[in-house]
Length: 146
Image 1 (cartoon, rainbow, N blue to C red):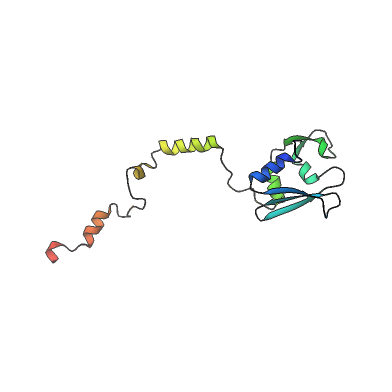
Image 2: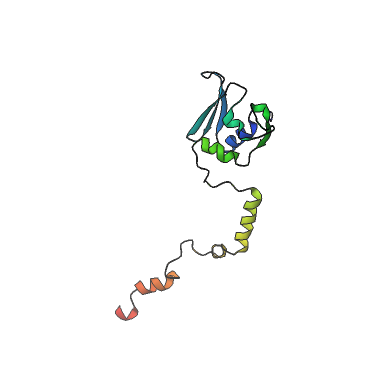
């Protein structure tokens, strides 16, 4: 495991704007309290150097793991989804894109010339009738009717 207990899980929780704190008081063997937004879950220790719900988010080192020392410092592939599920949070939310993907998307948009009308000074809310000039002329009284 990393320098802090359940460090990889705590990093996910913190990245999502939450907190993960260990509570000793009120629990026989202690408990981890995880909060993200309005959701929270309390995971109590099993009493045998194990928090089974958290331990199973890590890759086991041995065939039949019994306590936290039997797990590597590597998360299973769907650990974040499982963690969010424990909190009752749907995993079907948009994820943040890595910086290199954001830059790549920005380049694609720029190359597509999608923003070129705005660059040329066009209105953000163009008239549905094309330019506004013909529409204005239609409302003006004609010289013959004056």
